[in-house]
Amino acid sequence: MKFRTVIFLLPALLLALFAVGCATRSISDSGYRKESAPGTAQAASPFYKGELSEFDVLGISLETKNTDEEIRRALDAQQRFVLPKGSRVMLIQSGAMIPDEPMSKALGRYYDVSVFSGVPASSGGTYASALRLAAARAGCKTIMVYWGLLETAQTGDGGKLISWLPLVGGMVLDESQEMRIRLKTALIDVKNGLWEAFAPEPFQDRARSARLTREASDQAQVALLKAKAYEAAVEDIVKRYATIGRSN
Image (cartoon, rainbow, N blue to C red; front, side, top):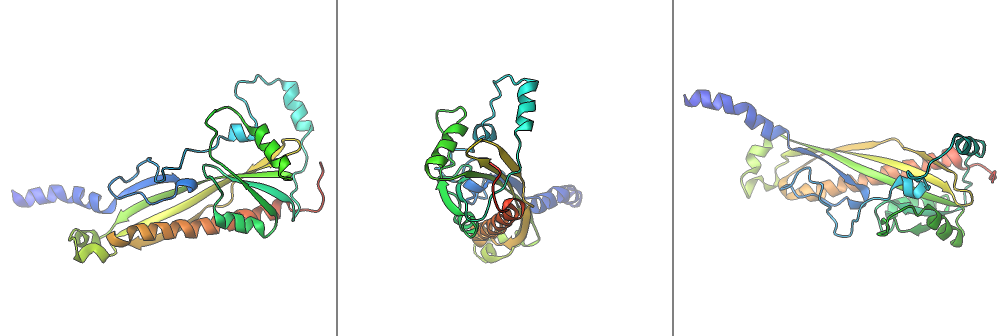
């Protein structure tokens, strides 16, 4: 009877060992989530207040009734978006008081960067025109807003059995974490409000950790992937838009 009980419990035990959890977090709230709450949506930083809305940033109102004529005029007004090297750009990271330093540095190699808060306004409503005015007063012809998600999936291995021991198992590599970063970028012309958006290629990394090194390993992955993604995003912008002259 005991033997049969062990057989029935074995699949559940293996599931607990190998399927630890999945989670998604913002690049602006990328701190480590404690193991006691895998997959939690709770913010890691007390300063994180959510994300900017694309509708607000791009000046799109869901309450406005748009006519076919207005849509045709918007198409006729469309121009090739260019961002010459050396241009002054207002950089905004959705959800963050200031953009991450690796992004500012990567963009700063090609452009004159001015930073602005990406924390959502408490009053609500669209504030695209307010952002454009702030950029104009800073001498910026372009606003760059970017959003990002960090997706993680953890799996345990045989070392998890050992790590249940409080001292011996603390440094046993008993868990693997797959992490992926996905960015989305919008470039907005301050003068006329025209914009373009694109998503750079995602990056991912896999790392093993022990119970005592879990947080350090997680944050090392975050830093690595942010640096790679930011670098790629800037290079993509230069490749797409850094041409001589500007049509507006």
